[in-house]
Length: 156
Image (cartoon, rainbow, N blue to C red; front, side, top):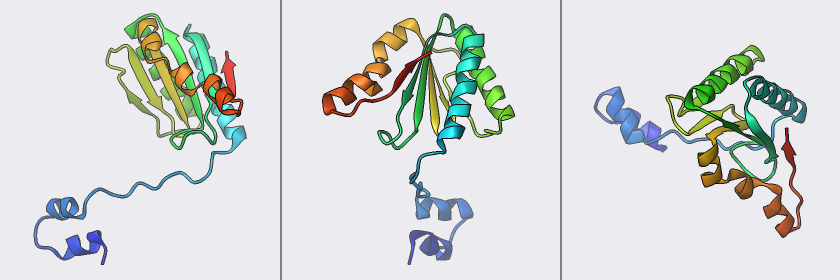
């Protein structure tokens, strides 16, 4: 009998039953998104960032290398307000393109804003934070070349 079925039989409120059942199981992605759709959304993201004067925009292809996303976009902003505005504009433009579930973390004024657009993750940094976290080094082609598999990094 599953934990959910056991919890349903247990006495108590629905909240207590849900707590007894434990967290819902997250289903891992089994296949990458369609490349045409990824390219379209990536284009919308990079065009929006360019329009908002983002600097050093980089697109990393993570297909087959990461389970959480197929593309990662990294860009630099000069100030908290600019970074927050870039995140808001991205959310609006992706929504207009049909991507309704866009999650934003850190837009309330920080050195790093993360935008989770499902198959594409966008990191917006201030210059110092970008240098500190060095995501390009972590996910870029340099590591793949050492492993014998050239990765794809696009500087926009």
